[in-house]
Length: 310
Image 1 (spheres, rainbow, N blue to C red):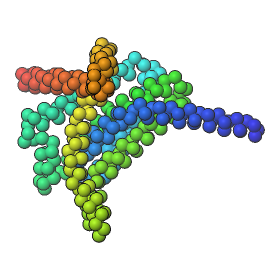
Image 2 (cartoon, helix red, strand yellow; image 1 turned 90 degrees about the vertical axis):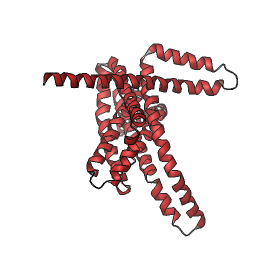
Image 3 (cartoon, helix red, strand yellow; image 1 turned 45 degrees about the horizontal axis):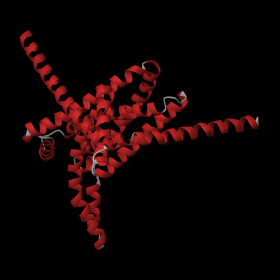
Image 4 (cartoon, one colour; image 1 turned 180 degrees about the vertical axis):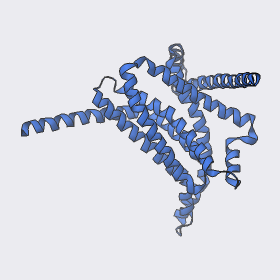
């Protein structure tokens, strides 16, 4: 009896050790997407009233947990019964990210008086604006973006544990889902409350602490602006990367271009490292423009058809 119990404990310890190793590998492979997820979601949840920032972050975090509660079992089922469908589904998600990114750019440059920042400032200043509806719009946009990035994280993790047993796959996927969600939204909460921390420190009696607080206050607005730029760029880098990895010819072209760049004097190593990301982003911009054009054209044709029918 005691021998059987010890053997069972040893088996459990071995499985947990394997799961720990695979979780570390998966975490390393998804680190790039994690950074993009952080930038995108920090940008998405900014612009609400200060006392509502943490509730909004919590609402998006709950939405992210719901996303992963859908994606983890869906990924396991697709992997078991329709493994060929993983890449096309990811590419659809990548195309959607590129579309959202290009739509943001088009809105910003074609409608400067109705840009996202301008609309946010007007909404906060206008007492007639329904802030509940405004927050819901922010939250739904952030949760929608999170779904695509979470799908990418889950897919990368699934590829890492493809050869493992089913129970190990489940444990690693669930572990990564929880780890990534807590990590991302913990950091998002810290970023959006950075200005409050700076204000609190600036009021301290200690000169050094007060100076640190004033420094944080001066840096915080620039950080938020940079997150907006990084968040939009991340849409193209992640979305374009998903698309190029799904199109073999394009992926090989990018790899060979990066390899050729390594041979250039002085800048070879730097350019070789950056070139794949830059080409992914460029492909994402083109893909986003095409999808936006198709969506706009389809919307106009649908309206014309509805008008003719009426």
